Image 1 (spheres, rainbow, N blue to C red):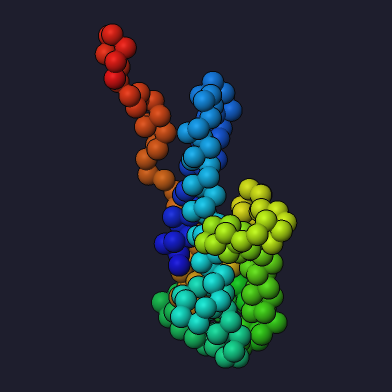
Image 2 (image 1 turned 90 degrees about the vertical axis):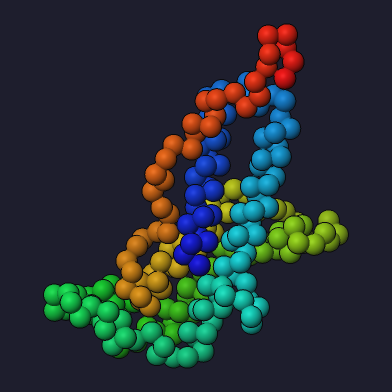
Length: 205
């Protein structure tokens, strides 16, 4: 799931950087067909990607499914199992890590905390799931979807899922990261500085 989140966050970064390019050079927006096509495909790809994390199907490997199964098995995430990853660290480091992330001095991650995280990803993804189900994966009657999610809602959903995913990744594997977002090792905008269609002197392609 981390790799998929990293990919989604990389796509989002490119999309918003491209919006800034367009704002600085509005003449590229006319004709608008290319940017309309790009935005439509971005919305479809990102909403489907976000929905996968909250898929409730029994055979799915989703964040929602993982949290639900943890909720069904009280004590599945324990201080003891977490601190076992820190054998080669200074004394107390593993205990401090568990207490900081779990928000408790108890021996297990509380059911209240798991339930709260489950509700959090459900709430932020509600409109996205409905949009995918009624407009992307299927086409239902207009009245069944009052409004589509906006870009802010999509970004909020991704940020919330990313945060919770990283917290449980830390609890279950001791791999500490605040976000799955990766630092890009190249300048993707270089492709925009080269003409995509070369023209001959007579104007033909």
